[in-house]
Length: 431
Ligand code: SF4
Image 1 (cartoon, rainbow, N blue to C red):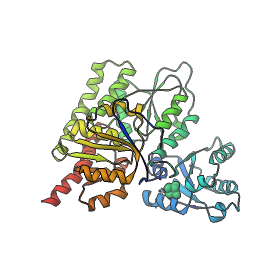
Image 2: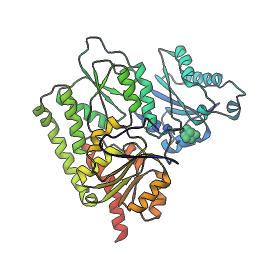
Image 3: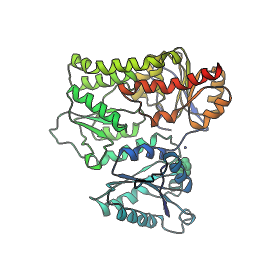
Image 4: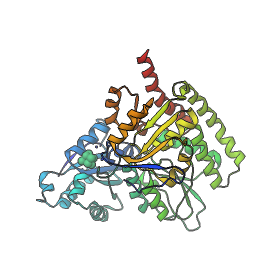
């Protein structure tokens, strides 16, 4: 095994939407794998290190997706499995111990080390849970060592974050027995967006808010039966299950995209914590008005236009709801890799009756439907965008929505603009 410093590089429970029929697809897929999540997770968790146990392909994927940090010590790397590892000629666990020991001796700043599984490590059945346990016993309390899978076998790229956060839940401290009701905000958000939410929650009167993932290992929030958690991302079903396993209860709300989604998200928290609704409205009003004004700028380009989402980021359902309810777009098909029925029920209910909802992926079938529907805008993965543009369609890269700050009131205008820009570009080209 050798180490290459890099950053990232292929179905969740079947869900039922009570109100609307869901077309289920199984076939060839065109998505990035869960290693991609390292790109944003390593920026968020400032004393964590992600060691991918994978191949040169994994190393190249990370490197091209995240770039190489020249001035800073990197916080991700790939332990590349060589042919003799794959052929079983050496004990891969011993090799991994050697790599981890070298890394931790050289980097005293690392407080949490994630061993991240990949397709090759899963194919040879390298037990990273066992490795994390063995190495954890050796390095605790200085370093916490955890593991999760970012492999491309049966995953889509945002599942990397879900798997990583779910791995953190068992090591969250238990809340004190008599602890008052405590709010936990779940999902990796850019620091600026997280700070905006914490400020708004402070204005509501909720001061002590736990955040998962925490920026530093020492701030990992407590969890228990008095924890009320709210998801900021729709793709965290394993994390949600793990939190509920520790007694926490989910606050149901729309996801905080746009003026309406963000208002609903904050109102649901206010209700759960018994905050006077007039006070909640007073806190929300300025941001809500700012967001509504900012969105207006993009309306001319989007209103009345037909949009199709091909399954990619798992953000599809709440974003389609935002485009429909706040910008007047007509979602023709909303395809998502996994439809988390209970987490997205309110979102689905706000889509028009005519919207086709599909779960899973079958690229050929979906492209056939796109050609027959002829939407004005297609939100899709990188691999499909260029061929669709060549056929005369207007596209938006779904992955850009994951890498851009799009949550909350102050990002609503930018979120709308991300969809409006390709429409205006197309109009300019047509003139
Ligand atoms: S984990 Fe699998 S899909 Fe992802 S880069 Fe490595 S080999 Fe490719």
